[in-house]
Image 1 (cartoon, rainbow, N blue to C red):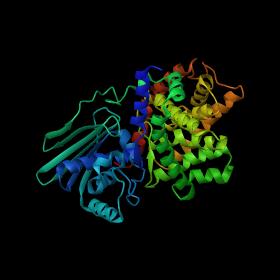
Image 2 (image 1 turned 45 degrees about the vertical axis):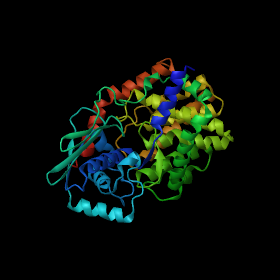
Image 3 (image 1 turned 90 degrees about the vertical axis):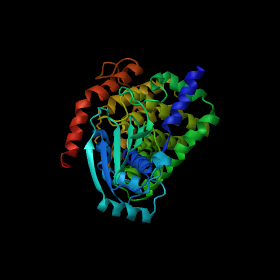
Image 4 (image 1 turned 30 degrees about the vertical axis):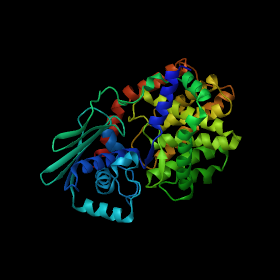
Length: 426
């Protein structure tokens, strides 16, 4: 494999596999608020929060972690202002105490705060302006969860970055280099000493929160319901484990996850079913590490042409990636993996994203099921063909079509979803 491509693929994993506590959109708001408060140098008396529709969609119904059950944009910003550690980025709220929670709730009862719609045209846009007396400060995150484009105090820019609107992942390694063939080649040949630290953390973090979801009482308990209803067979356990991680994460669990494509749900969906199958197959550790890396990179590849946030549920991409990871564990190469991806995308493409909430766990279960069914279909000589619906001959052509569907075709769907979700907030 070309050394530059190899290095780029490894860098993509380093950029993607970040630890985060709780749903990443409210955490990004808390991160921006902590940056603004730090620039101000004192506790703000007033907050002006500007967010794009997709941010609002993903914050409205999910619990902000470590806050005692608080929900919403203002609660996320208040947590970041009062107790956030800006230096921890997506773990900005890690380490909050009961005293911190009481302080956040007291602050919410007295602070003047408003939420406005961003008009930048960027689907990922968070701006927080904070005030104390005659002093003010501002922080803005745009494009992706840690892309800080501005921090200022009283008009003086402390951080300033120009962002090209067309490039949602501005400043990151070029993901358009990813193809299914190249990803398989990378997974086969990557230096394990460089790969394992990245993937091992993902496996450890995501397995821990999935265990918490299966033993605790979180949200709609989708993972538990799947086990109670359909048993501990490997196929169902793979679905249930990924769903249980989401059960916990969407409903206030303070354990961190390792994300993919800016999403903890995608990070869990891409990894946990592969872990379950590796255990079932007694796969060597090296094979597991390579299979999870493959699933991660395929998830990123499938999402690159769609964007970080859209009306298209990201679990679909991660579920397809997980199915491909299972195919890889079973010795599959390009043909098996390509057919698994196409079959899975034929089943669940078009599943909508209507924000972060408890039902994400059920969507994850469906996406994992599609990925696993896609592989089992291929094993048994059954497949969907180019010309079936939006499928085209060649896996990359099908991926292009799915990306066009999600990015272009579902744009109005996204706007309608946001309208429906916020009309009761007016």
